[in-house]
Image (cartoon, rainbow, N blue to C red; front, side, top):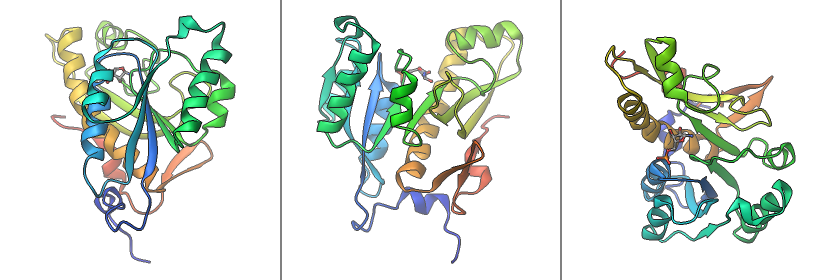
Length: 233
Ligand code: GRF
């Protein structure tokens, strides 16, 4: 079988024979990554559709973005629930009633329990604004600047029970300038996030992504260079 290029994978839904995977995007804020996914999914040949947006924070801009795109939204403020299990049960109920196949975490600021993560093993992606495994957790850009790193970036990975720790799907590297601030570095990274996340989701949705020995393998179709963006480096 001839290898097909990654770009072909991103077009995999085009023939109309392959049903698009139904994706829920979980957010807590502005949702610029959600917007990038919505924009990519608007293409008829993209192999996934954004079918649901879940926010744990009311009134965030990401909810407006979803509504504008005609995507159903649900707001589940975590404080309204007795505990984490009840909160996640409500999420799970909405995922089930919307026949969701895949989840993208996009600035979702709640840690999910191991039980929830296990139920979605291999079907849930996250984007993180560092070159993992460096700088897991919060305040990432400030910590990167304080450490004096010369290169930073972002990572799309499959979600596992350990925070920011799952198998890496793709990364983008950006230079760190001597006069960078948290804001300027975040903006440079965010621009790459918006290019990287739709690509990674396309690979997952097209079934091109497998995990073996804790490492992501892209089934012969995507070249290793497509898994690393490095503009300006
Ligand atoms: C992004 O930097 C993402 O990597 C991190 O949270 C931020 C979300 O930004 N997980 P947005 O809401 O998508 O604009």
